[in-house]
Image (cartoon, rainbow, N blue to C red; front, side):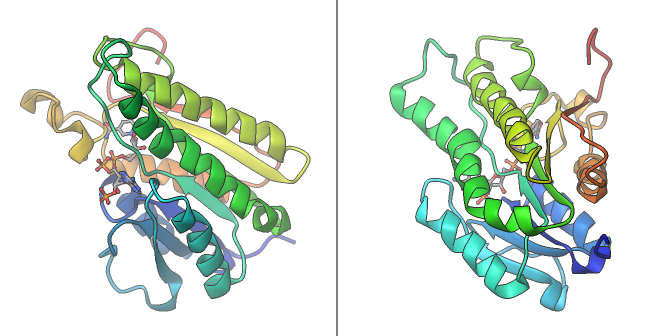
Length: 234
Ligand SMILES: NC(=O)c1ccc[n+]([C@@H]2O[C@H](COP(=O)([O-])OP(=O)(O)OC[C@H]3O[C@@H](n4cnc5c(N)ncnc54)[C@H](OP(=O)(O)O)[C@@H]3O)[C@@H](O)[C@H]2O)c1
C-alpha cells in the first residue's frame, strides 16, 4: 500500500533561496512534509509542523548527519531526498587551484553523496523512495573553458545520480538527475538582460522535481534535461 502524500517526507538542501526554495514550497503545497537543510533559516511562509529546518553547510560534514538525524527525529521517516545546494565557478579546469577544485567538489558532489549514505537506511524503509540530484546540462556538455570546472563537478553529480540509481535498484529506491540549463535565480545573474526573461523559471523545475518524487517504483527515470532553448541534442 502506498502512503498518502501528506505522510511523505522530503529533505531538500539549499532551500532558503533560489531553486531549492521553489522546490520546498512546491512540495509543501502538494502536501509533503519537508525538512530543509540550509546555511540560513528559510523563510518559506507558515507551514506549521509540516516544515522543519536544520542548519546544513556542505563544508561541514558534521552538519549532514545532524540534519538527517533531526529530520528523522521530527518526522520519523524519509521518502525523498533532493540534492539542490550547489555552487557555480567561472574558472577553467586549467586555471583552477586545488582549493577551488576541492571546494566545488565538496559542495556539488561529496556532500550529497554522504547525505545519501546517511539517509539510505531510512529510504530503504520507505515504500516509495526517491533521490533527486540537481545536476545541470553543464554536466552533459562543456561549452566554454570558463564553464569547465563547474561542468566537471556537474558531470560527477550526474554520475552520482546514476550510481545511486544502480545502488537503489535492489533496495526499492529510485534516483534521477535533473539537468537544467539556465534557471532564473541568483546563479544565472550573468545571463544577458534580453535573455533573462526567456530562461527557465525555478517553479518549472520544481514542478518536475515534485512529479519525479511522486512516481512509484514502476517508473525509473535516469535523467531529465530541461532547457530554455532548443539545442541540437537538448
Ligand atoms: N541557476 C541556474 O542557471 C542553474 C542551472 C543548472 C543547474 N543549477 C543548479 O541548481 C541548484 C540550485 O541553484 P540555484 O539556481 O538556486 O542557485 P543559487 O540561487 O545560487 O542557490 C544556491 C543554493 O545552494 C546553497 N549553497 C551554496 N553553497 C552551500 C554550502 N556550502 N552549503 C549548503 N548550501 C549551499 C545556497 O545556500 P545559501 O543561501 O546559504 O548561499 C543556495 O541555497 C544548484 O545545484 C545549481 O548548480 C542551476
